[in-house]
Picture 1 (cartoon, rainbow, N blue to C red):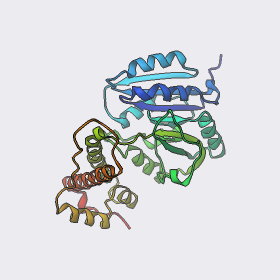
Picture 2: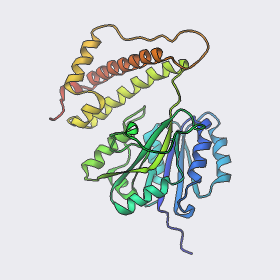
Picture 3: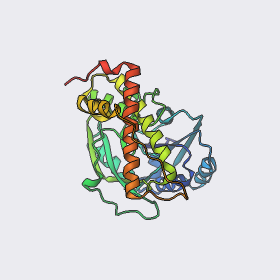
Picture 4: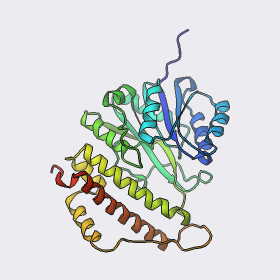
Amino acid sequence: MTPPRIRLTLQLCTFNRAHLLARVLDACFEQSFDPAAYEIVLVDDGSTDDTAAVIERARVRASCAFVTIRQANAGLARGRNAGIARARGERIVFIDDDILPVPSFLAEHWRSHERAPRAIVRGAVVNTQSFARLPPPYYTLANYSGNFFWTSNVSVPLATLREAGAFTESFREYGWEDIELGLRLRAAGVRAVFNPRALVFHHKPPPRLCGVPGMLAQARAQARTAAGLERLHPRSWRVALAIGSDPVRLALRRLRGAGGAARYEPPEGADRALTPGELRRARAAARDAYGRELLRARRDSGAASAPPDP
């Protein structure tokens, strides 16, 4: 008997988000798209929480082909590539483990691919503080993102992705691995279309006191991977603008760096949501941490001597 035609592979990676993953997988199973025509490929990137148990419970509920891969923690780029290697779909759709797709999500991606077979399809991302209280499922300009290839919600022909070389595995820390792949896809002449009805909700809870150290650490990690992106594309004005290494912002960063670092020490006491003033100070400290780490990482790599093309 001829095996079913797998039109779409829905691929996601997860790391220590068991508290969200069950709801995310339920939404992936509850698609209006033909269950025989899509598969889910989930990569567990070395989770140490209850993720394995969540996956086993989800396996019982799966309404489509459900492939799981477990690897030692190696970062999102390597996890994505492990998923790509197992994918069977004609198109591959990427989301994250804090993303909740609406029921028509896959059908809308496929509809766009039928109209533009060789294109990247970008969908809408609407932030929500809680999966229990979702905002209306409508895209507005407040949800705009200029990213060409953003794996919170994007799809691409699988053959095109494999020809481009998939994700660069030197990206081990937070950020930029999807932007870097997008640069190569754009250079190869692949165009992107936008479908606002291919919509997902992105879990973005209010920042809390306990999360401030992680916010600063993430900013520094993002700066290091930004420097890595610049090393791979040293003369790209798109990269310079994206990471903040254009001449104007570099000059401002160096001026700020001559003074003391912006610091924010969370007050002692019970954990709670940050007040608006505390959030502004925490974000200022994170921007400062990013800028200082970017200057250091660029200096260490010699990137400062390679200005972008105009």
